Length: 167
Image (cartoon, rainbow, N blue to C red; front, side, top):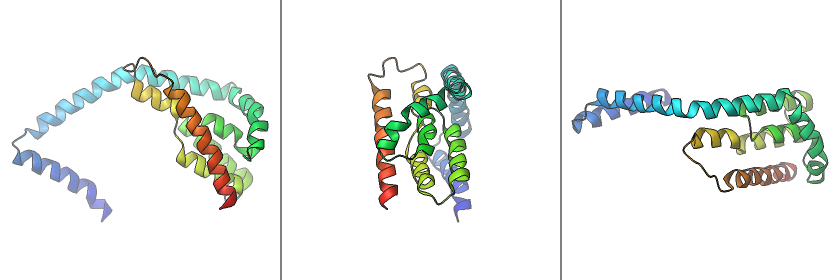
């Protein structure tokens, strides 16, 4: 059944366009032009964030920061195996998925650390990537939005670990 949803949606769009006498193909081409222009505007910001995240991970700074934050995380009941994941998650989705796989490999898929890591990755966002993608030069002042998002991510991480410990 789910294999038919997308073709049905496309067919419904063509049908509604035909009923309203909209030139469907011309509207599609116009939308594609706008998407291309948007991609050109956003690309420099996205490239900068991706390069910065890669440098952050490859330089060892993420591991150093994770080690420095480990005592705070331990006091909050967050396993030491998750510190680098928590540091990298706001910056890189693919990097955090790689670290999640490493937690599975070292701790076992059904351990407390793995369950907590799964909830953290599944319920948090890559704050800096999203800021670069949606900000993309159009937003000049974030007015603390990134700081608030990072705080919310950290609070969600602590709550995730508490829930995984007691449930």
